[in-house]
Length: 87
Image 1: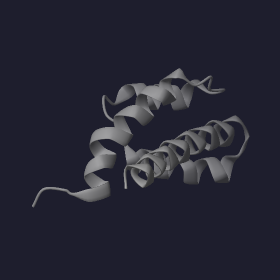
Image 2 (image 1 turned 90 degrees about the horizontal axis):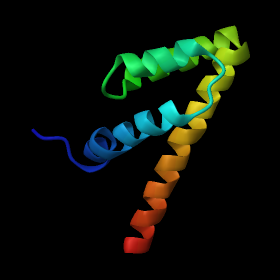
Image 3 (image 1 turned 90 degrees about the vertical axis):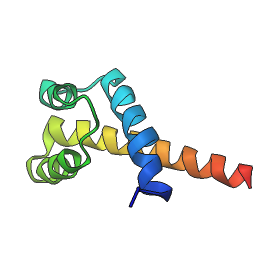
Image 4 (image 1 turned 45 degrees about the horizontal axis):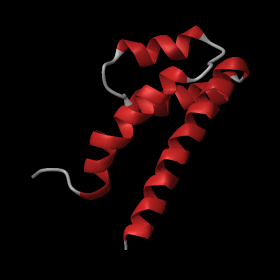
């Protein structure tokens, strides 16, 4: 069964945009940028695992991942706003 609704949108629109925009961020660690660059597509499972690690370790890693989370939420809110205006 093909993916529909939000899941389909996220994998075809949100994730590519998130990856592209994330690579334009001024990140403090090379580790996060390298992990994003390694995959041609956004790896949502990597992101979840990295965020858990960032919370444990803190510092620049946590700061970079918080910035990525902010970007992700911004894209989600923009999507919801556009959908609301479209009726």
